[in-house]
Image (cartoon, rainbow, N blue to C red; front, side, top):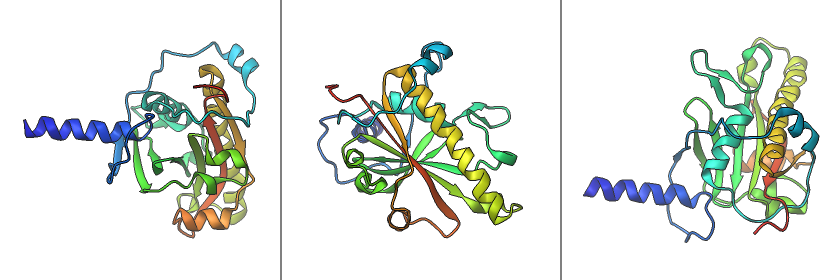
Length: 221
């Protein structure tokens, strides 16, 4: 009975991450195990390419955890378990880009190998993820951070050269997923990087590359 009660409480806390109208809780899980991504959904590729576009108006409606799970897997998840290969390429297989997820409930980093979210900060930093007004209210802001320590054999110029496109590949995967699932998104470079770096408690080897806002289109209830 005690174990069942504990499992029930963990499930409730995980649900509080993204489900609407949940009461505020004093504690949230340090690790949120994501549901198995749905890989049998979506529109044909050519239709998705036709629908792909940037949106700058978002509903405040929160994304269900299942939808976020599929989104993150599409962005940079493991699609070949035998090799650990990802859905997005990276130069020299460095996999130097980390995907941070800023929500109303806190800041998390995506662990692709465990398909889980690890809590980094237990506070809402969405307003600081960009200089545009809509970032404060949209349910999800992704922040792409390059860990340059994983690119040890590269020169400083090469680190800057490769990390940008690698983050761009991930952002485009997010664009295609959003087009397929009827979500709104826009990738952003207008960021106060020094302030965000400090707020996220990044190390000197970590660099904010891009951010991307995701949510339902404006008017969605």
